[in-house]
Image (cartoon, rainbow, N blue to C red):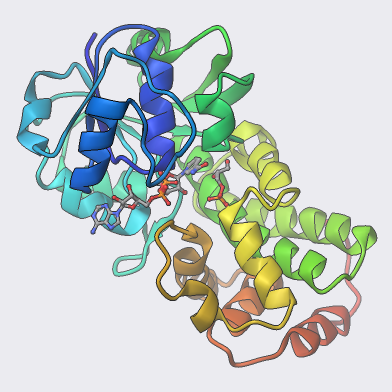
Length: 325
Ligand SMILES: NC(=O)c1ccc[n+]([C@@H]2O[C@H](COP(=O)([O-])OP(=O)(O)OC[C@H]3O[C@@H](n4cnc5c(N)ncnc54)[C@H](O)[C@@H]3O)[C@@H](O)[C@H]2O)c1
Ligand SMILES: O=P(O)(O)OC[C@H](O)CO
């Protein structure tokens, strides 16, 4: 099976490298310098510098060239998935969605966007605790592979699995997507806690209460709690709340140090999905009548309407409540 990868950022490049161990890979990148760097120097110096890429990866700037691929990994940032899917050449090819986020204009998960653009196309979601650099370096990684069709999932997973890249199947596509989208917002919050030097107790409390928000929202959207306790939910939440390797955590860290979101987000080459997801998630939670105070606090910091000290004081002074409510 020939694998097409749409998106030559860090994650698309790392996934291309994983798939390259099993055969040919065609990588579409928007930036001409990425295409040239991959094809000539075997390196994506813009988004994944320092990782030597396999000879079985060919890069292209022509989306039409992906027409003969047997599966397509879509790895554009969530806000751009719709526009790249609209230009995908072959309509029946299985699509594996690898972005983590919610489309701001429609409040739709990436899978819902794909169903809009390519009705009836076979869809799967790949998510989990996966720093691109570690994956590209061949460090052991496990992911959630969500697909309603088990037989299709088995075929696709067999093609992308590698000795150190281990997919676990679920049919809960919404659960996998919700976890991946919400953990980015919570990672910003965790970064704030660490950047503000509020201590390890506070970080652990935030992960735990943040997970409660993820569960509440996911269940309202039809996800299963087992999925959110798995790699794509709790697993990824723990990863991104623990390391400055996470762009979302780093953004929060800067906010915690007192920098403004505007400064931290201006001229950014790489994507911090949580900054886009937070306001839409907050609005969607409001609409569903779900209490998500940490998400709301992140929104206030991102839009500059409250200071770090004010949102922390606000979170800590909420009425006492049951843990499992
Ligand atoms: N980097 C990781 O470790 C990692 C791991 C798992 C999932 N993800 C997810 O993968 C997705 C892509 O992230 P990334 O880290 O590969 O990106 P990145 O931050 O490394 O690079 C930014 C990407 O955005 C693309 N882009 C910018 N404007 C665009 C436009 N108008 N149309 C299409 N593409 C555009 C760039 O071409 C580039 O591919 C995100 O949803 C992210 O959450 C990333
Ligand atoms: O760098 P982040 O915060 O986008 O996180 C990357 C991946 O999603 C981790 O699984």
